[in-house]
Image (cartoon, rainbow over all chains, first blue to last red; front, side, top):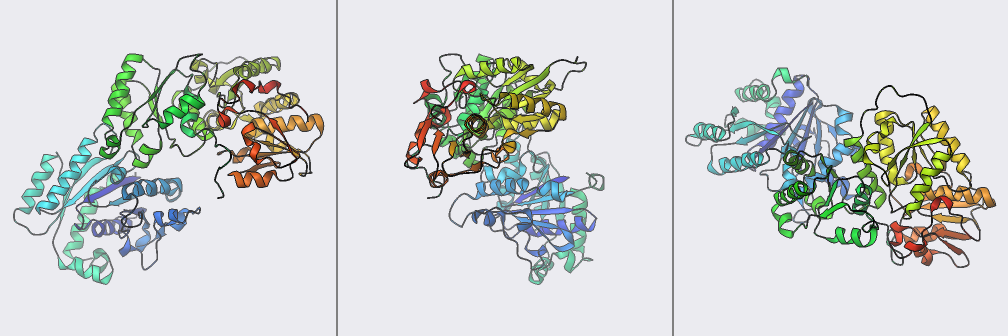
Length: 252
Length: 382
């Protein structure tokens, strides 16, 4: 089982990317679980095929025992989907909610029952507190990928996340897998992200073009690789899927 | 108000349970907490301070440590103390604040272990459970780290028995522990390791070489299960109360030879009639065995009420898990007599007698001098 976590500035396209990767990896014959780690609980919406998916925190809030099947559904291409959810907006502690939800999924036997080949954690924005570092902790993701454009705020957020990861050295946390460039077509974009990666001794794992096709896919309520499987954009996503999970790792 | 306690106290918490279980094992135990857990443990739950030393510390967690997520102060303090005091291991005990804050104890222990070269682990308590869970988790965690593979080439001999679940919280009178050792020997068993009072930790590390474990309180269940799961050592949950000892020894022998774990409670028939029965309230292994002894001696129907966590598998047909005063009061309706800690008096129905049996984990040191050697305890007036 390989566990990967995806971080990056809010709105940079993590959920879009993770949903497409989940589908591509499932198409390669892997058992994939996608876990949304954001109180908004919108990571898995394009893979749900219209099915409702109560979040783990929603079920916990009911204060009655529940089963894994109550918070886990099979979506497109058989990808298993769960959403951590969070406290009511403006109350409680969202970070602690992520910890509670991920621990609950483990307690409910997610990993033993589903025996996934790949688990993808789609994590809210920045590592703002211990809770949002949970997917980086030992026994969770092995590698973290940071999605960024060349825009200053995005690079800044990506650097913050990478620095947080670096500060966890010695704790047995995830390694930095690399940076993923999601182009916004700003000047010197490739160079900026390449420099950022070099600062952390990492690589740019892949790059995605800015394209209206992503908006079209969103309008259609589909991941791009389903809407336009032969498009160059789908080709970039496919190359990225191979880069983050090379064939030799897929049997793990 | 289903789970409220208004007239009666609640049991010792999990943090104290963990500290109590680790007290005699030669390590350094650190409660990661501002101070509340410390004063509760020191003042109410631990009675060994004047008899023997133990390295029990409090981290003195501050609001800024929590807000800033500053684990480094804890790590630094623990490492410095360990350097000066040379403990055999370091155990961090979690409490409500760091639990709520999501402190990563695995990572903290990893860093402490690397810096001190000592085994470091944490007990995942959170201050919201009772001592059975805390002591149980502590003994199980210690077992996972230290119990060794059995040595080869053992010669046939007496049945070796571990004794699981010994803390002053259930056995405040230390004589009970020495009595248990003598009784086991007299019954032809070889007392092998005592978890975790009055024994050398080196003996506990060899618990895998025992033939059977005798779980004398629910606090010992997790570690006994670990020994069963990992090394195939079966366990019997029973307390050799006066009057049922032969039955306990015979079951212990049977458990060792069959390799099948069991609980005496499941085999107990404590009489049909509930109306006018003797109700025993408290820790299920000791109370269940005392109930069996009373029933065997007097023929009086008995029922056992268990207000403690992680005890479900220890409940036989005459046992009921209860939670909160309302439920206990309802369950005691119709009781002829109640055998329980004296602090349960407000819940005893009118017309029923209370037969006092103080329990340190319930009333603290208030009735300490009246706590008997449980192996010799015969309730009066029944």
